[in-house]
Image (tube, rainbow, N blue to C red; front, side, top):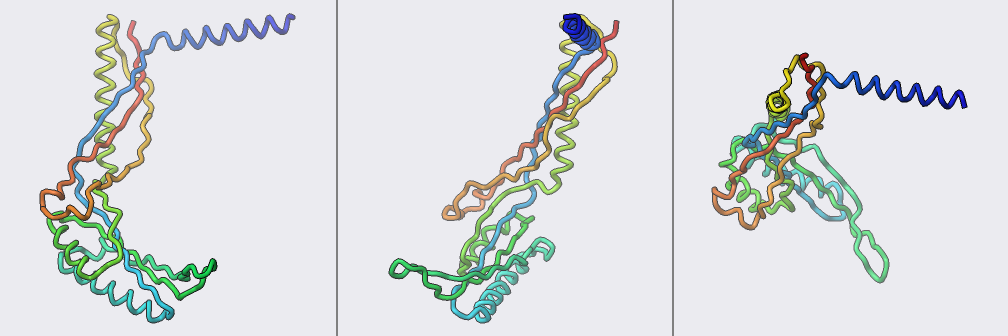
Length: 227
């Protein structure tokens, strides 16, 4: 019984102490948003060939890849903005009489492109379609320097936290001291903005406007209350 009473007294003392230690601070959460126009467009070009000779398939894919690279070079896409290393070779099966029969192989290559001049987009797509590429997908508009954009949003969040604290202090008729604790409560995970436009409607330049990306940040600020 004595041990239980001591435990209760210690718990009450801890709660009281924690309460007292927080009675002279005010904590607010600041939020900031930055709207920034994307400056790059990323997409993936897929080239694929089927057949029973892997060497021949490799040659066909390489030949089409060279034509694609020529189109991109023609429209001033820099080499560092093109990644064409993704290759795959796997068996090609067809269903016959309730069995999977291997007919040959599928040789494919993905070419990842970063486009910086949006106005070249329609012409590039048109020329790629004439090459009969298998697929063009993964379209997404991005802000290239997302780290700096997030830092700008974080700065706005800190400023918002100060304004909220000032507003509370004014209404509570208290005086704010210095910031004694700050915590970054947002999770910086830059996410690309996918383009919802269908390739079938890519006919006019106006349809390539990327809009704005929103970058958010939040912080928790604790201020000392002056006596």
